[in-house]
Amino acid sequence: METLAPELTAERSAYELERGKPMPSQNHSIVQLNLGFELKTRYRDQFRFMSEINIAIGGRVLVPDVGIFEKTPVDMAHDVQVLTQLPLTTIEILSPRQALDDLIDKADAYLAAGVKSCWVVMPKLQGVAVFSAPGTYVFFRSPETLLDPATGVELPLEPLFE
Picture 1 (tube, rainbow, N blue to C red):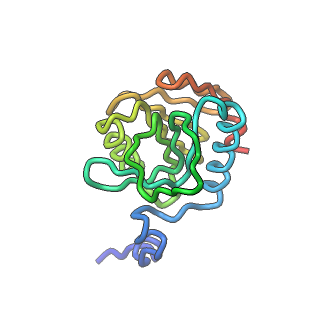
Picture 2 (cartoon, rainbow, N blue to C red; picture 1 turned 90 degrees about the horizontal axis):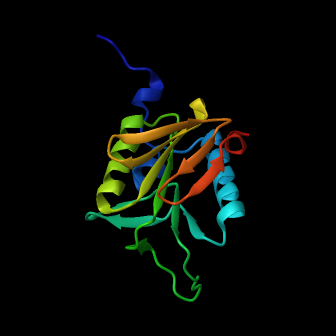
Picture 3 (cartoon, one colour; picture 1 turned 180 degrees about the horizontal axis):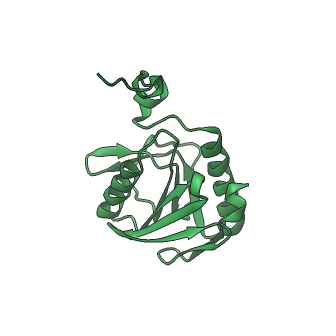
C-alpha cells in the first residue's frame, strides 16, 4: 500500500479550518503586502482596497486576499463584519499548499455573482491571471505590466515579487 508524504496527511491548522483555505506562506505575505502598497500608491483616489474581508456571495461567505471596491467614505464608528457590497475586482494569491483549481472555482463564483474581474496571483510563476469571465483570462508575468480592462488598473508586476 502506498503512503502519503507526512505534509499531505497532516491535520489542517486552526487557521485553515476557520478560514477554509490554506495557511499563507512568507511569499504569499510579501506579495499581498506589496500588492496592497502598489495599488494604494497608484489608485488611492479612485478605489477602496480591502484585505481579507468577508463578502456574502450566493448564500456563502468568501474571503479574497484583496478586494478592489468603488471609493466610499470610511465610517470608523460603524464597522461591518460581512459585506454585501461586491468588489469590482477580487485578488487571490496562490499559497504553496493550495490547488489552483480551487482559486479558479472561487474566481468563477465571484464572476457569477457580478464581480467584474478576478486576479489569481501565482508567486512561484511571478505571474497573474486576470479573469473577466469563467474560463476567460489574460496571463501577465513579471516584468510585464498587468492591465485590467474592468477597472482600468495598470500595475507593473515586478514590484509585487520583490
